Length: 369
Image (cartoon, rainbow, N blue to C red):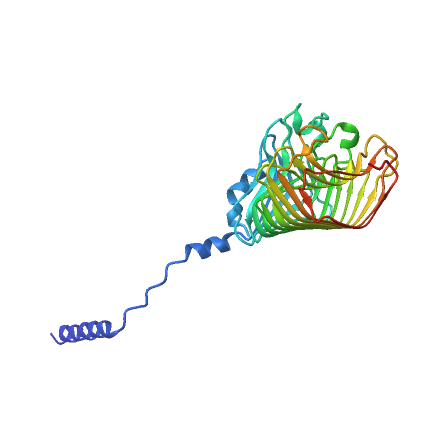
């Protein structure tokens, strides 16, 4: 009986102690967003299926490495809607399979994105498979190369593009974009039928800064169709259609564009503003400064040193009056064109070209109109 009494006493004491002790603090559930953020920081994709993995995993990676990837025919390497602050690095040789299709090899969008190429890396478009001398105007259907859509507060640095089937960089609806240290090399297209291999096409942009690029191609080196606050500087263009504003279509607005410290050689024209016949639009505050034109002696290739054409796509030499070109500055533009080229041609509508300020413009050779 004494043993039973002692056992009951122990039970009562233990129960009282348990009741007196505080309940343990609840453990917080893991934060899913933090877990995802830590899950994969650097992701490397390669081979023929790498594009699928990259597209599926892109938002889980803070750094995306594209290493010796072979993108199949008719497929876009989809890097759209990247997580803010993502870095994309191209390593080795990235290739793209052949098929006739409308689209782009690469598409990238996002905010505060850094896109760069490792030294020695190449994006190889294998353009000769498509080239037929017709570009986008017929023949084989040709994809564009690198499309940046809604790419904002971002940098493209150190990319080499080899033999684009058609346009290289399409910069659409971008804001505050820096493009630097770029090589576009379509020289093989000079003899193999490359055409419409534009270097940079800019549309609906606000704030684009392009510097230290080299472009060898068979269409516009740089082309601004719509946009404002755009600069290209310290660069080189060869074999192209030069530094172009337009073609300016109906409703387009181009404002505050500067080309500075550039060399343009053996190009169909070095400087061009072209507005579509009958269009109603606006072009203002355009500056070309410190431009060297080297037309060489390549006859039947270079047509003009400088041309303003307000009859583009219509009756030649019959400019229309719908596009006002105002505050057009040429400063320190010099060089030469071959004997069969025209140094300067201005075809403006009635009172549509105003505020032209040209200083130290000297082009030798060719014909004067």
